[in-house]
Picture 1 (spheres, rainbow, N blue to C red):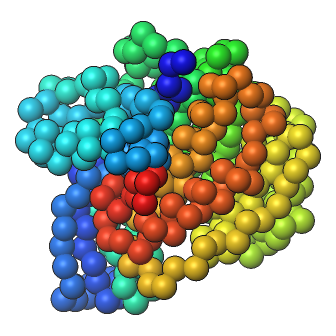
Picture 2 (picture 1 turned 180 degrees about the vertical axis):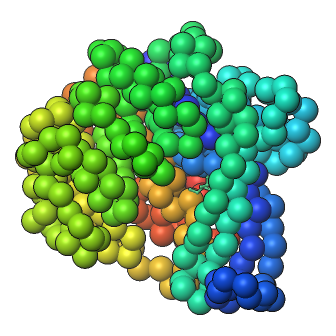
Length: 340
Ligand code: RIB
């Protein structure tokens, strides 16, 4: 039997990471602890996480992973850092386009040691916008039909919306959508209709539900993260299932764990795994998305209906992987392999 195929459509970034004992105030100069350049981008990190999750042993991968994205033409950092890290993670990069006249996307990341490795990120999309602005071209790059397609919010909004709608209308492909970051214009309900899995963190959940509440009166509008109680999350999940036919809704809650809700009726919170020392939280969410997606791809490729997918088990495994990720520095480099 052919191995399941995951296609990740999204950003590839060079991450410029400064680790500091605290964030400087406006106008202040502060001596930081260290500086690193690493492979990143939510798209590339999620592809690496899917690929690494699939390494059930050191030399056997049970899921195929393809990255669809764009980088600056002839960028030496792509070949030496990003592409090689993706290849080591078992990700096929044939459909990463090299675009003339622009640079590879980049992210400036501040990791705050004093705040438990919490990060602040600014990204410049570069080729991630210029080389990904034509949804038809993006869809036409690969001739294969993926079992699961994964998208985020760091490539042009119009492309993401069209691609999500395209695959939501297909019988063969499930969509895992992680709208990170959420665009200020929100996401139209019609795009989300029929989605396989929606994965958001608390901030994204607030922004998304607020934008939906303004367009649709049945969605609960929540003002602040503290108001996202389990009862409210259950209500949000129910609205997504009933109004938009989304099979699975997941809200990652950082140190409080993960909330999940499935259209079949099961819902609950899975506590976070204990981590002795959190070093850097960058890519923890991407690790979660990748590990969750690998589990989903295995099950839908076996013909299982997504409604019967064991979401709780997938969240537990993805949680364990994220816990390993936050105990290490960096983005892509901190994502664990399945055999670990
Ligand atoms: O999710 C983490 C990623 O977000 C980083 O690798 C950075 O590139 C930003 O896009």
